Amino acid sequence: MHKELCDSYGVLALPRTRDATGPCQALRLFLQTADTDEALDVIELSFQMLPESQRWLFANGLFQPVLNSHEAVDKLNARFKEHAIGYRFEQGQIVRLDSEFLHAETTEPAFRLLYQHGYDGALEEFKLAYKHYRGGSEHYDDCLTNCGKSLESTLKTICDRREWEYKASDTVSKLLDLVFTKGLIPNYLQAHFGALRATLESGVPTIRNREGGHGSGEKPNEVPEYLASYQLHLTASAIVFLIRANEALDKRKP
Image 1 (cartoon, rainbow, N blue to C red):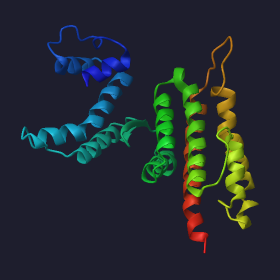
Image 2 (image 1 turned 90 degrees about the vertical axis):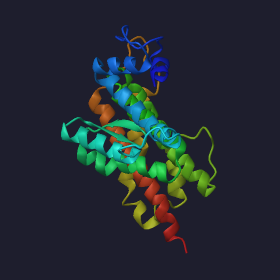
Image 3 (image 1 turned 45 degrees about the vertical axis):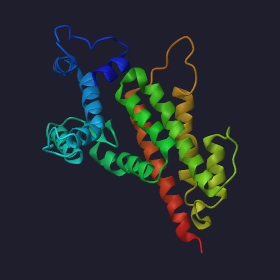
């Protein structure tokens, strides 16, 4: 863990750990003096490594864990919630909770559906979007970019599995045109969902292109937090909608 964090931060030793006698003490000292983002990095890495480390230690007869990895995650999330800390460990990473309702209804289902149905590329890009969102104002433009990539990958995965031909260079707008033409949404609902289609076509890609998809020029882009938050939840809602619509398509076919 010490080496992983040093590699991540691009340093030879963790800050404020000059008096440490070894990597374990260095990690402890670092965590005790860490700011919020650094502390979350340590917690996230700890819980990412927990399942494998428990299996190794148990297999070698070194100890019997008091909690298994799933129970430990549940306890961590309960502590976060108990102390009103707006984060949660989910699908192998710390995610930020701006709203319990929005998270429960959009973000968590998006993570779950992408993982369960094997949308690996879209999942990694959505995780990156969340990571950049957690990184604060300097990373909001990267958050927007990865939101756009995740939506595009979701559409391309659906097309690949349906064997619907598209060009690698196709934009989200063209991909949406394709899936609507192929009946991802039944004909009798397409008029009703016209506004939804317009939202999908113009919402995520447009925000990304204007705020995070191009060079900023002389002055850096200043993406506000509320826009990054909106983009994340809009992307999550779109992903959930598309994956569930793809599932429903099989049920509609004779």
